[in-house]
Image 1 (tube, helix red, strand yellow):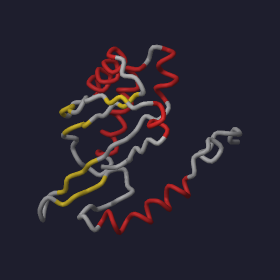
Image 2 (cartoon, rainbow, N blue to C red):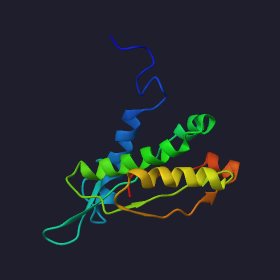
Image 3 (cartoon, one colour):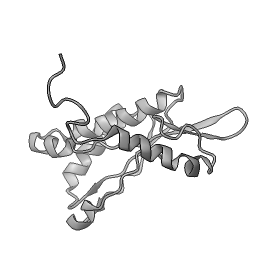
Image 4 (cartoon, rainbow, N blue to C red):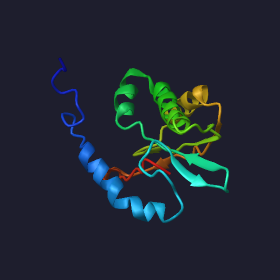
Length: 148
């Protein structure tokens, strides 16, 4: 018996809306040469025999809880694992992990914890690490693509 409130809908996440967005954008995205839009990893043909698999993910609201508990390093590891696993679902070998940190106020030690956590699980080349300060009002308008 499932417990009340443990569904995406109960958490305020609409899977139907997510599916509608993917279907609405599929033609535009696939017109660029991308394949498998909406899957865990996007595929782009390099030649007749090879595909490049790419994925990006977000750790969502986890840092809000982890910060209070001093566990931001775990969030970095989680973010890396999500991206690596998504690429591996299509049989690809992870080559690079491009990370991005945005915060209303960048705190050196917090960013370091996130990146060091990612580095602990990442055996692909970790690149990026350019933190961005986003004023609070702009953060409310944040747009995080889930696939790149």
